[in-house]
Image (cartoon, rainbow, N blue to C red; front, top):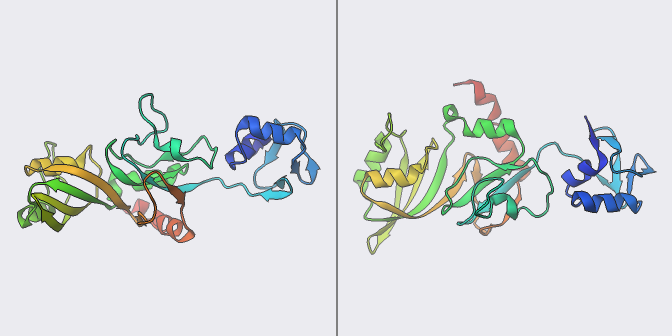
Length: 245
């Protein structure tokens, strides 16, 4: 597949479209050893050797980022009222990245950001039942009755009960319970609605894992990093299972 040279450079994070055009004009970019002269020059991302300031750039079709979503930003690529999760990614100029799934405006935690549509579909497919674990602080005393109810499915006002969920009680102080909850579906406001169904209110919610991905303790809200080779392999190892359901 052939791309415009300026698009190729921006997708690899070499700068904005106007910045890479200046780099090309300054003679800082070579294609197969020859100095590039025009930003519209076509390059083959797999066959051509493109260098910036003498350093070869290797094109990757897909990028994968693990992002710690802070409260107050929306899980979208564009929004007219709030900052989006994409506004935090400062070292990539790709225009095709998107968050895999959504977290509520006031919910923190792990989000995968990528441009790999097939992988995103596999992770979000209802038939896949990918596990997602949340840490929450809940107003009220969460007890074993709730644990058993969640294990058997909760009526949140839909046609069917929720799928079995694993509720773990971490402790309770001043009528506020700390818990983790693992669910295998992603209904609208599901965690909050499950606790509302048993007369309790979620005060704070944070997703700490999704499938094989775990939110690192040292990744601050608003920070992100590329997936490690091990994390990416763990995600892709699930791909052959897509047709089992």
